[in-house]
Length: 444
Image 1 (spheres, rainbow, N blue to C red):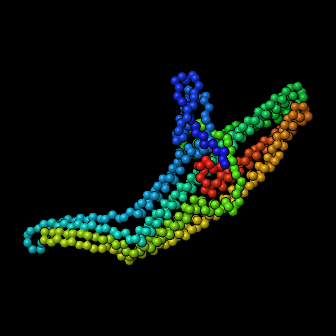
Image 2 (image 1 turned 180 degrees about the vertical axis):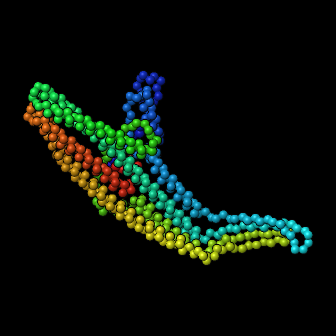
Image 3 (image 1 turned 90 degrees about the horizontal axis):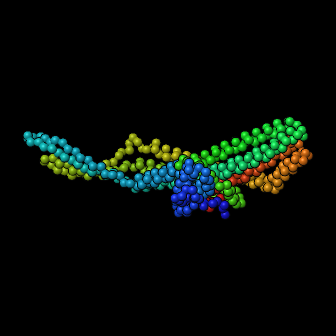
């Protein structure tokens, strides 16, 4: 079950009369992203500056990232390069055509003429060399495909985290605005009490200072919202420059599976491990190829030579003689590459398990914190703030007590929001480690 909404956004229909209301018309699903871009550009034009932009859902934002992110495009190009390398490895060597011409003069006599010789040399691709070369290229293509999936997981997870970070920043901005409104109201009451002589001047100074601090906190919260929105725009690849907003729906998070079950899923599904295994396989095939290249590689030659007196046909075989170079260096490099790929595979496996344990622990800690807040801590802080404010209005509490209660409430709310989003981020890391496709809206 998921609360993600992949509702498509339709651009406005055209109308001859610009003074009337602007209707909306549906568009096919395959044009949803293009329609949203047109709508965004239209809505920020000078004639429509007062229009409210539709908010992007998580599914719509991920669809735009999948289409426009340059890192995803680069990983796809690398996969195509690897596939082309597999085609290159399976190609047969081309024949070589040789043509020679020159003058001819007999040993006796005065007549002379010309000579012509031509031949075709065909390098022979030995089965042992060819099979190992193709196998190494196939392993390289598998490694490139796994690497592209790893990039997809990383970019998709970063996009989800950035989306929910903007949701959190907007909630922080809203909380800061509510705090400022409340402090301004309290400052007005304090000023009234000071003017009638019921409170000392110091309380007004304190209220003004608290209000100024709240105003600065609101400005900082708005700045963090714009920074988070800039991160989302960067993930879109710069192809979407129009102002946009997002929906603030939070995902449904199921129960956390046991750690042993998650570890098994990570070791069996994560593309980084498949990429490391493919690199080790490619190194092993490269070693086989280097050993096969120790055998002299033959070339078959067929030729003909002509002069005014003689015409001859020749057929022969050319072999390289492995006297000076026995490919010992290339074989040693291939063996070292196997050891390196094995070590990298072990390191990658250990790193993924460490990341999983850390994400699992973060999720459990955040879950316990949320349960503590929802069990009564949040309600207690809200009740204490309301009681302190009401008692201050009747003169039963001091202004300092009201400020302390408000500060405690702000801290509790902030910690509660922090715990909620820490749980979401931990779950996204677990999803990434389990290799769940982050661009599919059916996933939390």
